[in-house]
Length: 272
Ligand code: NDP
Image 1 (cartoon, rainbow, N blue to C red):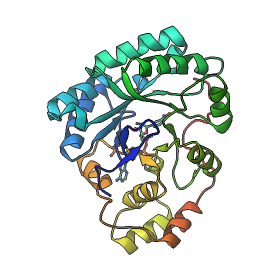
Image 2 (cartoon, protein in one colour):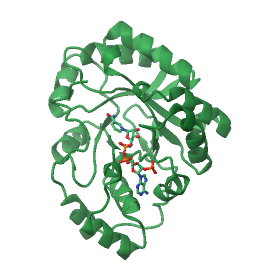
Image 3 (cartoon, rainbow, N blue to C red):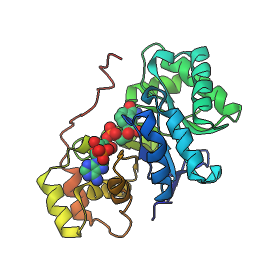
């Protein structure tokens, strides 16, 4: 495997397993960050309308000079725009800001009660029109996926959820695996809270950093990962995880760190 490795979504689209997250990256810094990441070999950028940096991301893509077909771009419809017509309008805004004709993956950002079914119907429409290559959801628990399944015809191609050694999401991961819905890990680096003794021990053992140990664990658990950094040395460090392999025992020890601990909001109890 390498930085270019992909996972095949259930509609046949190839999605890079590793990408750059840009939550909390100021629009003014997004262009240079994205350009640097692409020059460092990144093939996948994860943004969202609510990050307010789609324009900067789009500029960074242009500045990098990468061929469009070599890059995979994800964005998401924000909660305040959910609903059928409003989602179609929000998509147009995102597409314009990103300066892209086609978005690779468009996600329902959060399962907003009473709205996400209509929102997803708009995504199905965008997919049918060829304006997005893949559609999916984010922060969906099993019961959200069950409800969606009753009212939609396309199985989501991805579910992007909080996932790291302290939140391994086993039941959800299993449920999604049975339906061919890969998980993407958000906050894979626990928002920088990497000071766990086991991670430090394994960093020593493999001659890697704690961040690299966690990101390699993501890949070996079959989860797509999108670490965020605006620090050039870390952008390079995070992507340098292809020259070693965690053994089965160490994989199990990392997974056993699970505490069902969230650094972000709970999809069953959020107020935004
Ligand atoms: P991450 O777990 O990726 O952590 C980012 C933090 O870790 C930053 O403070 C960064 O600092 C630091 N960091 C990065 N690399 C290293 C390293 N090698 N060593 C030590 N510290 C490091 O958090 P995010 O919440 O940003 O999650 C990643 C992405 O997931 C987001 O950017 C976004 O794209 C997506 N996301 C999606 C959500 C959703 O609801 N769908 C919710 C939250 C995130 P610095 O930048 O200063 O280097």
